[in-house]
Image (cartoon, rainbow, N blue to C red; front, top):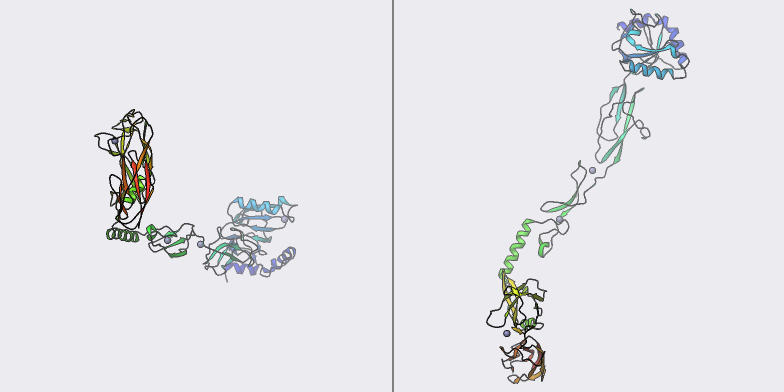
Length: 475
Ligand SMILES: [Zn+2]
Ligand SMILES: [Zn+2]
Ligand SMILES: [Zn+2]
Ligand SMILES: [Zn+2]
């Protein structure tokens, strides 16, 4: 038993009646109320109902508030006058002390109670503790299945409150009741042992809309940093042709390995199966079918579409000894006309006649391979006064039925644009072509020879490309 307790027993008789009266007045039952007349006490030891006399000291000085009328004491946790002042305002505002504000004062505990000083409190007078903010209470953290937090003893709730975690849940705060109706306020002063209850809400990871990928699969990555969970993870989906062979149809990932393989396969295929490109009579006929040269201030050249052609080269020169040169190269397979405004680097000389032909080509290994060649058209210059062009071709007969080996001669005549002028005569008046030599051939002079069973067309062309078609059936 220490000094403190001995002093308790010495004063027990004196104080018994006072204590009894005080407790009765407070309307509480303080079974373990103690009295202190001397000695040094830990401020956290003094409980409501305890009685202290001048001469008692605290191990740590505290601001206190005293009502000298009621002889009551409030002990704060602070050491400066601010906390005492604050507490005094609180006390004066209460119903019990509103009529004696002058009697409520505050100071340091160790000064008020120092027996040797001229402190304002009376000797041999019991002062009752009504409140002590220094008393520590147990805080128990019930984490409701979350990470454990050790219990602790404090005068108030920690600020901030400790953090807890629980797999698959988000922490939703500490509550002072198990039903989560009252939230715990950080820093709140404690008046009793307290259990805090952790509230949890189920956590659902969120995921990006964009795909993440590696070389084998794709997935939606979580936007929460606490997980590496992947949503919709699956292997890439590849197709069987073109870029789909190495581009995932879902996430658009491009597999470099697959790309190399696909390109190697493509190369092997082109090597083993060379593209068959050949000029044919049918393709020539297709090119000639709409072949036309209109000479004026510009020269407009039009031709027929050749299936599978990648482009066309247009050759042109003035009639005479000049060699036809490429004046335009058309890379688009669907472009079937061009307009030429210059020849020999100058504007078109409209007095001169024009000669022109067109080649259709296909690109094979980066080179142009001719798949069709037109006839060469000779067209009168617009301001040429001496010659004219054909307007149309008249045929005596437009179809022939021939037995194999038999012959027939095409009988054609020209209708001129200008009847007074002759047709350009430095080339044959008519040129002829067949669409299929296996069925029938035609000579320079228009003599048809039936070669084999079937049907084909024989074309008759005037100098300017103006054409007529004859049907030949060989029996
Ligand atoms: Zn009072
Ligand atoms: Zn998450
Ligand atoms: Zn993918
Ligand atoms: Zn010519």
